[in-house]
Image 1 (cartoon, helix red, strand yellow):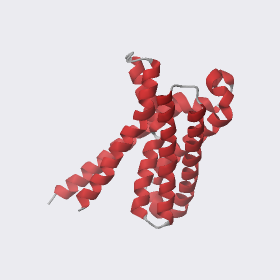
Image 2 (cartoon, rainbow, N blue to C red):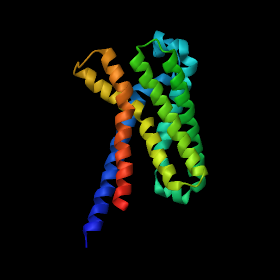
Image 3 (cartoon, helix red, strand yellow):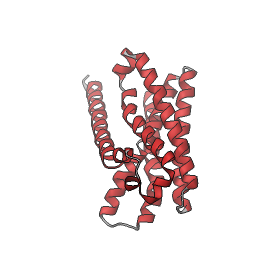
Image 4 (cartoon, rainbow, N blue to C red):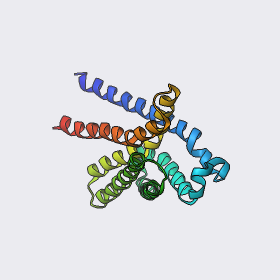
Amino acid sequence: MNQPKQNNNIRKYGIITLALCTSLLACYYLITTALPMLIPTEAVYGSYYFPRVYWVFPHIVLGIIATIIGPFQFMPKIRNKYLKIHRQLGRVYIMSTVLSGISGMYMAITSDVNLPYAVGLFMLGVAWSTSSIMAFISIKNRKIDLHKEWMIRSYVITLAFVTFRFVYDIIRSFDIGTWEEVQVLMSWACWAIPLFIAEVFIQGRKIKKK
């Protein structure tokens, strides 16, 4: 009799734990990497990024906006009680991710880096923009469940920058691999692996329902 209640509690606390861990990692990324880049000077950006500051700066700002807005879109209280706010934030989120994804693709194409690293970043931009566009198309066609699934995928990819920086710092702290090798690895692993895990979760819920 208490099994369903126990399962619900486990699921509830699991979601809370995941949310807290995600929030801490997002804060780590924002404080150590993103927020300092809001000062668009050569001293902050360096000789590599500063010549493309007009692409890098919007990319970072839009990424920060999406990172902050994302969690609020998954809160049932906001979604149910403040539907208008939910929709407005959703529009801002989708525009931010699509535009930031496009700017990321441009920077990947024009980057003077090795090909595997550039392709990884380019595909990150493609996956990010596409998942958000699919979320928008789904809700426009009143496919609510499908919209939720695409929003989960989109936000998982939004957090790719968080994953990249956190794992990269850990790997380099142990002096594993060269700078270039770790960059190439993380350009793919930071979004492809979390997206795979999210997909297993999404499809697993459907199997459980049946």
